[in-house]
Image (cartoon, rainbow, N blue to C red; front, side, top):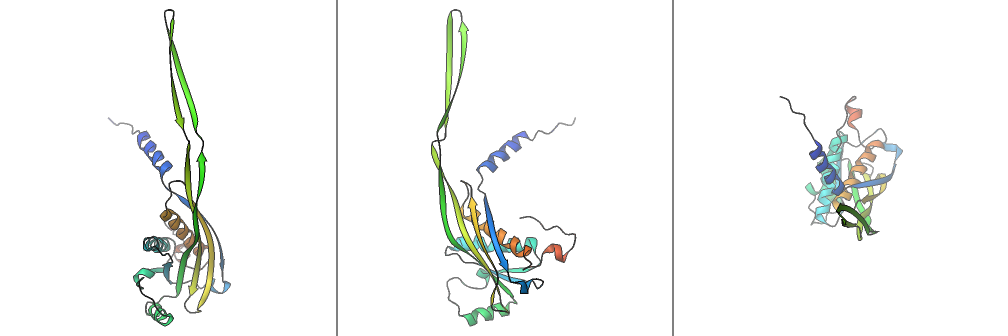
Length: 222
């Protein structure tokens, strides 16, 4: 006997999870130097310019994860080549980049952040019922109350720059604003901004996409 599967319970739990899960979105504007279009970067060092080391790791991890998903370019985290507690001279940095075959350096840094608060007004809903027994009427009512509290939604702005090691200048630049729901964390905003950064780089022709390298291949979405 084959029993019909009823996924209602799972769908309900999924709906509740999505309702309380943190999520963020990013709007970005970018400009690219026409000289590099058609000459995309093959090995990129990504640097999350955050004072907080945890935020920096989140940014660099997401940048490399996204590059691997949409591009054939190789990604290297700055944390893996440069110790964050040490100051490097320009000559030392160039030596490290050359030794590792890096032709582009992508820097993502926050420029501002804050929270937007809004008040959810309190509302009440009353339901009642009544019954008759002989000459008597019996009734009951239930009142439910919701709202009456404030919620805060985080936002942050970012600037992203792609440097050409060979040219020694910026060849791609973008600014972005990320915003989240009431359950979003700063990590959610960082991941959103970094993911959008790589999408823009690919769309602007600064990095080779998997679609260009392997026609008919659909890159995975992360």
